[in-house]
Length: 181
Image (cartoon, rainbow, N blue to C red; front, side, top):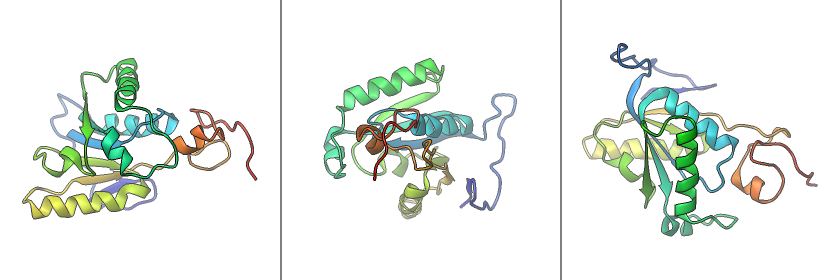
């Protein structure tokens, strides 16, 4: 199972397929998240996914699923999160290549989509990606290539996160708004 990322080794580089059609190494990749407030870290993760795949499945956690995740902050309604994500994809001219779907449980369509080739994860979700691959193998499906994308750091060197934005520590770009002791 190749893992490609900054700082992680890889068994092999992804093969480029059908270069006349696309320079991207995969036809279909996926990533998922809550996408509560679309910050620079989310934009970076999405950008990396769109560099790798011709089509990108973006799973967004449903309101019911979010309630089971024990977030440290309120989360905006699913429809608002999807609206902002859709607007971002349109602004980047990625709408024709992006497919937003509702994540009702941890793995969503990634557990059963036969044509899915790769999953975009962070270091914090790599273990979940490995569990997904075990599930896929048990179901007779090919495991996914896992691509670990480093979390973007705010100006203070700590990761950009929705929790930090909501706490008023940083803005959506990662600029520090106030200091914490």
